[in-house]
Image (cartoon, rainbow, N blue to C red; front, side, top):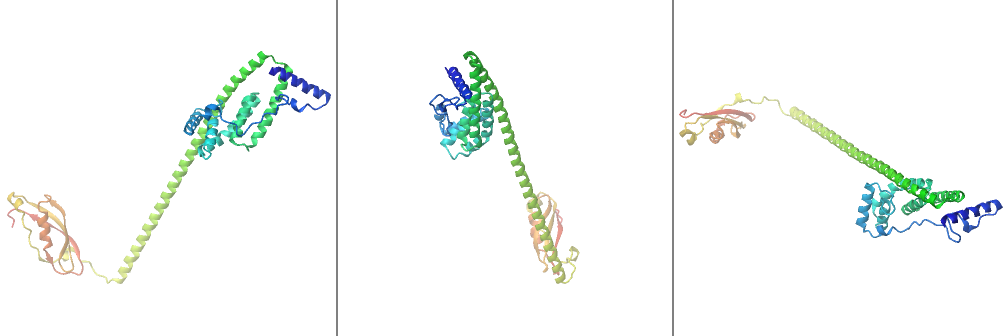
Length: 339
């Protein structure tokens, strides 16, 4: 029936062209008499299967279809339809909006390719997805017009050639096979390109983060060097001021120490009973008045046997007064029966 209608319309067009009269408005190619031309609605409803999914199920289905390269086909089970339904449910979903922006150029190309291979049903389905995605996109009107023109030319050619139903069925079979193959290749290529773009974007972000970290490290190190230089300059200036203000004098040395009283340490009873000997190297400071302070054990052999008695004895030592404090070291020996 459809072929007979096409042939009749083609003959009507031919007769109108021969008579020089314009064709009736109801004889537009692809539209039955009295029927308005089909228009793509921006608010076309989602398929029944998609409409039954929850928001979380839509998001998961969209992500899975995206990963499996089902970007805009097959109908009813592709990332674009899932993301559109998700956006309609959740208008503020940034992920859905971003994904649709990425998919839109690919859908435009796929629409043009479906039109060129005369797969007008698929072309109009894809055009509807584009219009639902962005009704103001400049390709919407252009694609609609070009699909109409291409379909009109195809139908006129079919009418002129008077294709049999068997030939038309074979043509459609070949068309479906070509569509499936081309869509699979297109979507796989598009998925690879998207993955490469995302990887490049991630690498650029990581490189930017590394560069920023390197700049921060360099700036911090430079600030630390400047602070260290400033402290060193301040210390040198302070030393120079102190040197110019203070009278010159010769610091006393250990040789200048004159002992007044250096009582011997008590021999630890346990070490004495065991006949144990040893020595302790003690560091201490002799103040200007000759008293001893800051006594500490530097080395002891054996450890912790004679330490306490050595420190106790040194703290009781007294020396002649001097002009300035001096820090020195003395070795105190412990020998059983040594007195």
